[in-house]
Image (cartoon, rainbow, N blue to C red; front, side, top):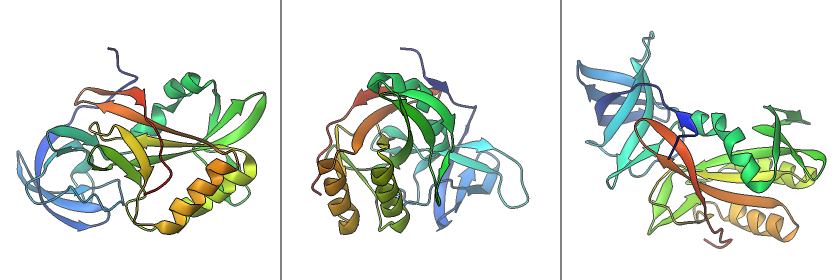
Length: 219
């Protein structure tokens, strides 16, 4: 099947250690390198020896940017910017029309402004990479930012999309790591917030929105 978005050319590397939330040391074809990690989640499946794919980008501090990591035989997308770039290809599935990216409403900035039933409303996409027993979840740590976005979306009558970037997921639910978000998500669903979870098929060549996943509102 055709891709919704092509990925740039990447190089292989093997993780040595995660230095901090945004940087890793890895061993590439040219030896040890330092790479930017564009994902601040816990990423519990990353460990020394994990296979990575990175986009070379020479800079003063890093040799490139990690795009993908291998987990249980599958490539997981770590750079959610590509999922956001592919968002316009997803929206027609739900009857939404993409208007523009990065709208600001009050103190919050969202991923997109979309048309729903003749109204322009904000849409926020949250990326999920944590999967256990076939179930993806978000957030993988306590997140006050995610809670603020959820409350702002509810106030604005917006849309929340969980982009599941791990190919082994078959369902979605909130993670048990942040009980506040779990309770707030269930409340938002009861009050009518539009909530979707969609799994993305990931390969070294490109990405495709593969299937809508069932959403469960208990951890």
